[in-house]
Length: 251
Ligand SMILES: C[S@@+](CC[C@H](N)C(=O)[O-])C[C@H]1O[C@@H](n2cnc3c(N)ncnc32)[C@H](O)[C@@H]1O
Image (tube, rainbow, N blue to C red):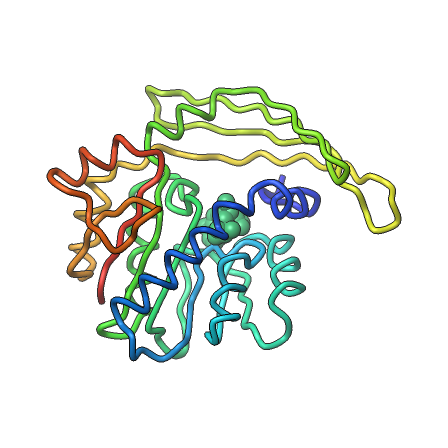
């Protein structure tokens, strides 16, 4: 079954938009601070429905989004219009024609990749897609956040009814959640959907090492609410106390 299928993409915008909306504000601030004179071009890896890219677009950036889900990309097209470049592709196997001054990747893309090997390929693809001196910022959900997968939740609004069931095998570091329900269509009827999304615990120290091996430099970890301030002390240990952490790197 396709992850991030049609009905879920609609429910995503309704229920999961606050985090990417805040992320975009922080990422814009980060880019303006780190590289104020950079060309305004953004690559969003795992762009989903385009919530982050839309805020960059409003700030004058030309945006390119890449995602593996066609349903998410269809919503991104509606949100971003014809001027956006939207690519159906895999974050671990893509190339761009002209490298970007900034690449971002938000809401747990490495957790969806399933192995350190694939995370390494993702970091390499991003490296080739960013021009020398450019910036790459991506977040990772920590083990602490993934413990929250173990839950059953029901959410009901005028637009949708969602049933969320998740389970994490802590020892294996692997979890999944199944979200099923119904979303209101434009004619007022409700369309049913069901999607299963997998998530793995990501070893943060290994990601830091892999970034260095690929050639990224000046890497630091930061809390989502303040991307300009590196975590103090042992950054990996500090990151494990958070639910989500950003890696910020220069090419
Ligand atoms: C939680 S959503 C985040 C979307 C967007 N970045 C945001 O912040 O709103 C995760 C997205 O990652 C995409 N994704 C998962 N695995 C991927 C892969 N291997 N390559 C590209 N996109 C992927 C999914 O299709 C989904 O749109």
